[in-house]
Image (cartoon, rainbow, N blue to C red; front, top):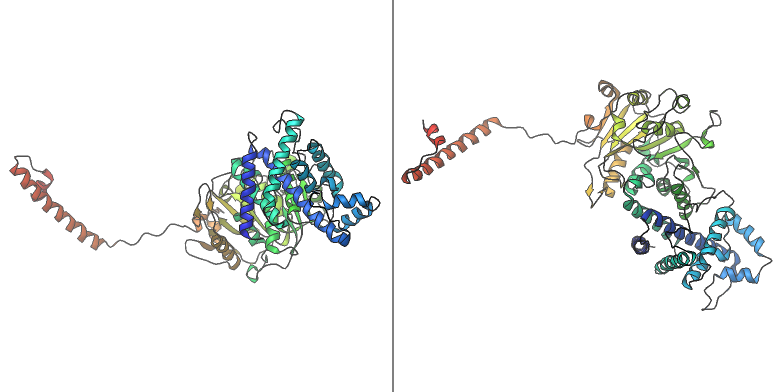
Length: 542
C-alpha cells in the first residue's frame, strides 16, 4: 500500500459518491457510503481470520461461483458452525454470517437480486445485536433503508442500493485488498463530506493537520517534554470526539501498543455511530475503545460520575475540539457540580470554559490536556476572567498557541490551543504565535508538515524566537490583569527600520529643487504660448 493508493482510492470513492447521490444531500448519502465501506472492512477482516483458522478446510470455489468460500463451508459443515463462531468471537471479537458478508451483498447487487434490501436490513440488525460481545446497538440507526430518498417504493429502493453497492465494489476491486487502506479511505471521505457540509462539519471533524499538533503535544512526557515521547498512555479521553479522528491520531502517534484504551463521548447520534465504525475500521478491537453517546456538559456518562477520589477515573491525555462558543443552560445544580466548583460556571452564551473544566477535572496529575478553543477565552471578562485567573494562579496553563485563520471547514475564525497540566515545572507560560505560518489553499489555510513540526518542537523544548514564541512570567501576566491575548506577548509585526532624518532632509531638499527647476522650464513654454504661469513656481522664486 502506498500513499498514492490511499489518495487514489479516496478520490475514486468520492467520485462514486458524487455521481450516485443524485438529489440526496451529502450528509444523507455519507451515512450509506460509509456504512458500506465499514461492512466491507468487517467482512475482509473476518474472512481473512476465518481462512487462517480453517486452514486446509477452507473451500476452493469454481470460477463461476461468486459466493464467499465461507458460505460453502457453512453449507458443508452445518454441525460445526456453532463451535466455529465461538472460536471467532475469541479471536476477532465478532461474527458475521456468510449471507451478510460484503462479498455476498456485492454479488446480490451485481445480479440485481430483489432481496438485497431485505438482506441488508437483516445483516445490519445482526451486526448491531449479535455480532459483537460489546454493545453495538444502534450502529446503523441513522441509515434508513426505507427512505424515499432512495426511491418511492421497495423495487426502486432495492434497484438504487444495487447500483450504489455495485459501483463501490467495482471501485474497490481496482485497489489492493488492504484493510489499512479502507481505514484511510474512510477518513478521507469523512474529510470530503465535511468540506461539503460547511458549518455543520464542525460537529464531527477536526482537520488532520490540527489533530497532528494536539496528538504530538500530549504524546510527549508531561513533566519533561524535552525527553521525548511517553512510553505509554494508558487512557486517552476526547469528550467531544466527533468521528474519532483526534483519538485515532493520538494512537497513530503512539503506535498500536502505545495506548491502553481510547475513550470518547459524543452527543450527536449520527456522529457517535461514525466514531464507533471509525474505531473498528482502524483495527481496534471492541475492548480497546469505549465511545459513549450523551451530553458532556451534563456529564451523562456514568463512568465519569464517580466522585470518590479513590475510584475516580483519570486520563493520561485529554484532547478535544468542542463546539466553539456553544450556548448552554447553566443551572444552580451545575454550580455545585464537582467539575466546576471552585471555578464558577461559564456564561450561557459560551460554554468554552465548561468544556475545558470538564476535561481538566479528569486529567491525571502526570497527564497533559490540549484543547482547541476560540480566542475569546484568552481575554473575555466576567466569570471567564475569574476562571482564567484561577487556572493561571494555580499553575495549570502551560502553553498558549495561536493558529492561523481558515483552518476549519466550519468557521473562518482563528483559534488557539490551550495546553493544561495539573503539575508543571516551569513557572512561566509559553506563548506561540503561529498565526502567519500557513499556505493559502482554495478555501482553507494549510499547515504544511514543517509548520506543524515547528509548533510541536517549540512546545517540546520551550524555545523562544522573535515574533514567534516567548516564555512569559506570571508577574507580567498579572500586570496585564491575567489577559492572555497572544499579541500582547508575541507580536508578529516587524519593527520599522529607523529613519535617518538628516538623509531624508537632504533628499527632500534635492527633490524640491528638481521640482522647482522643472516647473520654471514649463512656465517658459507657457509664457511663449501666452498662457498663465504655474503660481507654485512663482511663489518659490519670490
